[in-house]
Image 1: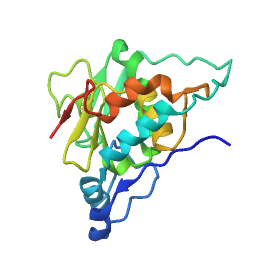
Image 2: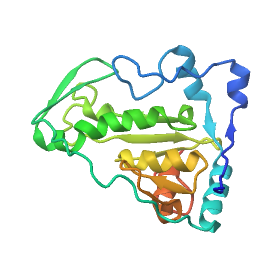
Image 3: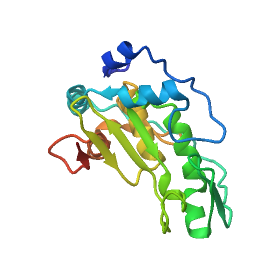
Image 4: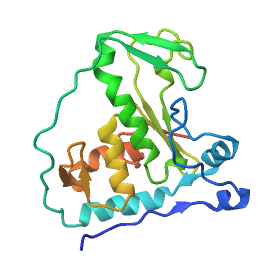
Length: 212
């Protein structure tokens, strides 16, 4: 039986407000945050326990690393289109990007949206894609995703850029696993990804972008 770890979310504010988590189904158009007034209020109130995160990181570090497991050996490569049309979920504005951005983000952006919706504790996080919109952020030519995680000590950790592999690490760590599974189902010990996990989670004493 695999060793599993559990994460505790500080949710007293959520219980007091009576808010309910939004249904986990894709909105139309896709959005980086939860939808609806109740879900928006829940997202503002929810916070992750930083002390618990530190404890769990230490648990992963001390645990015996599981053996790597092979995933899919053959898969079809799909080329990105020459242009990417981005529709902002906040303002509805369309932004066109040429091949360089399209190659990087056409499939990454969709993958990150899907992975974010499946993250444990996602009500404590925001996946910010506003830099893709030239109306919301004029002059942006190299867009990227930002991940914000709110903690119970009043801080918010902000990391940019983040990609699908980062969200997979968080999915498996917060899901109580000791191995991370990539897009081809290849599993590697989370212990080998601890530096990146610490950065994503804003652990003090490491390079992070934690700010009050």
